[in-house]
Length: 162
Image (cartoon, rainbow, N blue to C red; front, top):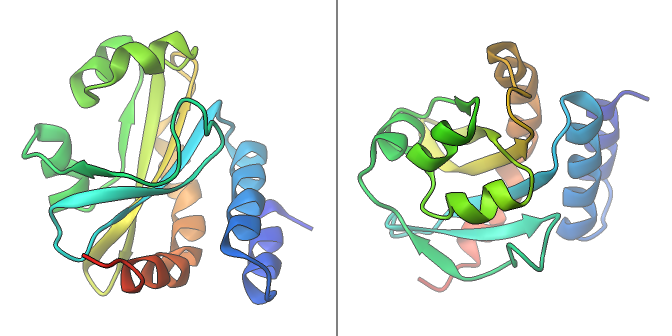
């Protein structure tokens, strides 16, 4: 069974979303690799995001909101609905306010894959690893995995109180 097939099977089961996200985590690790993996959805107001999954809960816990800012990263990923790849620590510092923590975890490259449905950005899949780890082709490889997250992201957004 391919990593993608594993995700499809998990999506069809009646298990918890967390179980599905763990299958996705492993599938993406097997497909392109990562040290840190998180899922963030855009709250109904469109003004903040919330983490619904992480493989490093101590450093990046589930829950809590982060305000969306009008940064160049935001324009590219959120407004443009396009994947973003950072190749080194300089790119990480450009994109993320918490770049020092990210680099301290051994992550100097990143890839953010938008989860989009009907032209609407629902959230992002976020993978981080060592410097130079990701390539442009990796974003295309992960787009089908992002499509599988439409339902779970819509569920998370629908359950959001504000």
